[in-house]
Length: 217
Image 1 (tube, helix red, strand yellow):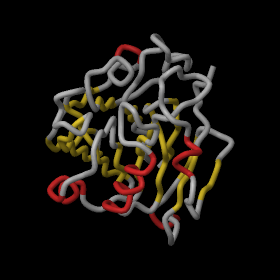
Image 2 (cartoon, rainbow, N blue to C red):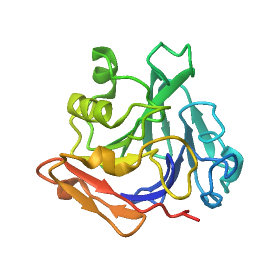
Image 3 (cartoon, helix red, strand yellow):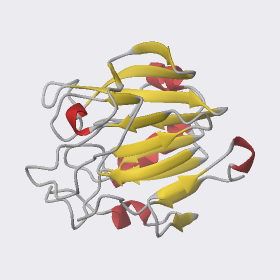
Image 4 (tube, rainbow, N blue to C red):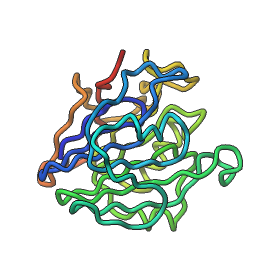
């Protein structure tokens, strides 16, 4: 599996069969200075209907768009949507959020979208085993660094890739990734947007992998 960090909460995930999945494509406007997505995809997942996560038109290739809860099998990839919220008040402030779990290449990847709260027991059970977790860490609009660590402890992924944090290409009032990295034992900073992983190469102990956004301006 190849994981390419485009920026914000957008990733391009490519499996061994060449199926291309883009998560939460952003619109390069209103404080987002990342370059436009401008990538081909077969599938796009949208965690919620905010402009910085649902810009499906920015993706090329006429992809299948997946929204909301439920399980689908598309191009050999099983995609499970689990309902959560964008805030701590059951969606009263920012609405609903869908966590997506992708099963492909014998790996389970979880994209938490704009999760705004700690996960409940039922949600943890529905998510199930996680090999790779893409998690928001910037706070304000989502869980913050401390809460992100608690979520990680609850689902126990082998690889953690932070997203939705402050960069020079983002004007949002959120924290940078270094706040999340405090007191983290195993951190791998990759001077590239890409990370390749296989089932038999998962780290024996949990590892945080920080990727460089591909679309930085």
